[in-house]
Image (cartoon, rainbow, N blue to C red; front, side, top):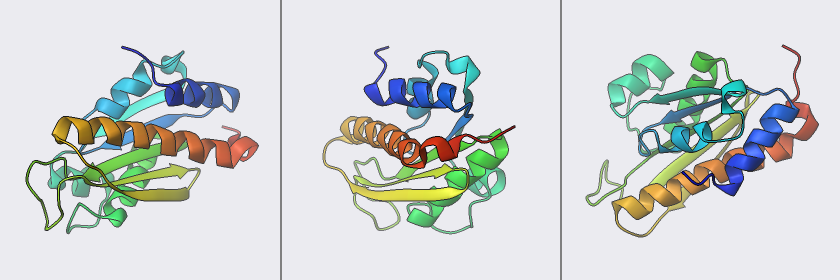
Length: 162
């Protein structure tokens, strides 16, 4: 597996600042975790991922508020839940509609990605084009990029004593 540039940056930052990384995935069904797991020395910084494809798992395991799951709130709560469950300093989450059919009244390609770095949340709404495989690949890229950007923005502030 070729390691994306964002993963190399995430690995370097995680190692430099002694950060533990976690993931909560719905739409991407483990693909973000697989990319991170291929990173340099991942066993020292990647706590793991939770694939919460079923809404009931999002609610029960990650603490997502019951209701629609293709929302910014769901993505934020998934990221916060992953950080809590995995004991992670940094987490990213994905939820959305891969297609080919709409879900929850949202068209295919509607994706929410959220990150949390020491409790500071960020998120984006993506409106992606393409078939389901293309939507998933783009979502993985954006999730990794959001995590990398959030870690860079936090900079040395991400370093927390354990």
